[in-house]
Amino acid sequence: MPLSAWVLPDHIADVLPSEARHIEELRRGLLDTARAHGYELVMPPLLEHLESLLTGTGEALDLQTFKLVDQLSGRTLGLRADSTPQVARIDAHLLNRQGVARLSYCGPVVHTRIDRPLASREPLQFGAEIYGHAGLEADLEVIELARACLLQAGVQGLLLDMADVRVIDAVLAPVLLDTARVSAIHAALATKDVAALWALSDDLPAQVRHDLCALPRLFGAVAVLEEARRTLQPSPALHQALDNLAWLASQVQGMDVSIDLADLGGYAYYTGMRFAVLAHGTRGEPVELARGGRYDEVGAVFGRKRPAVGFSLDIKEVVAAVPPRPLEGAIRAPWGMDTELRAAIAQLRSAGHTVVCVLPGHEHEVDEFECDRELVRVPADGGVWILKNL
View (spheres, rainbow, N blue to C red):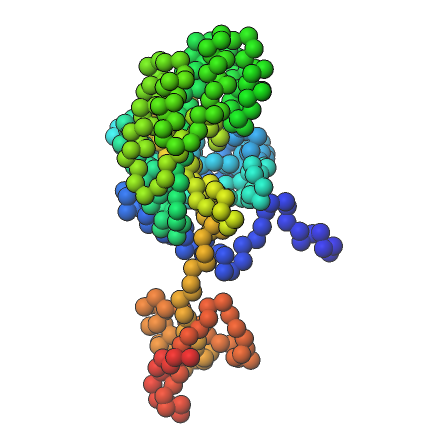
């Protein structure tokens, strides 16, 4: 068989034992953190009928979604590229609760392409969402949960970056534009391309054009919100968005806060506040580790529009951003059929210890578990089995 048969697709990788252990420990910690905050775990499927999977999500997620044909029905299926639409379907059709629903999830998603260098096309996505409450209290709770999860993972020096899509909506409210043009404006804002914005707004009213081209420079400390009030055409929608961001920034604890009113990164279903939590990378550069926001329209396509806010992160990216966790020392034991030996091993394992039985002929091999104790018989000719430090 040629060597190429063993080469994985680009940006797809095996996970080896030490990293896999770290990922699994982190996954358990994140799920426990979400549960401690009152979030119930759901497990949506990896693939669905394409029309259900992509309903209401927009072109960006469609392009990220792998598609295949179901051999049973002949219908087109999609491998999920994001779990939020699936959780919205669960909330709308399966739970159908009248009050607040707090839901968490964790599982692989698959992307057709990467959105930044060195990213994986198979993230392990963890997320948490609140359905049924439109107030800022839910927004703040989700931000605080994202912080708690990253702290639990061992990330330090967190930075919260916030924006609100209602700012650009307020700027464009005086004019009626087709979808293609709005998408082009959003793309130019996301890259802070003022020249493109100037060209795209050449026939728009002077104030709208001025405000569009001003948005890319409205980023920085929280004081930029006041600059936005002075710079942009005032409107009730604009001031509500700015007021909400100011309140959230004043309530957030344990994170430095920045504002970027041109930030439109991520999926198209956000309808209000959106945020990213960043940390310093290995070279001191900011690295985005979690992203979320408000998406009150996400359930409408499933026949049940209600408030929703949440966040998600890729556990693999978080693992790469924190130091490896120290291994807990394991216990080495001889292999044998002695009844008392097997009972001692079983008792240690039931107490939570890792016990590695050394197979005959492999006594000097080193394994990942770094055994620091050994199960030995004292006296050696037929006594009891005890633990001895190595």
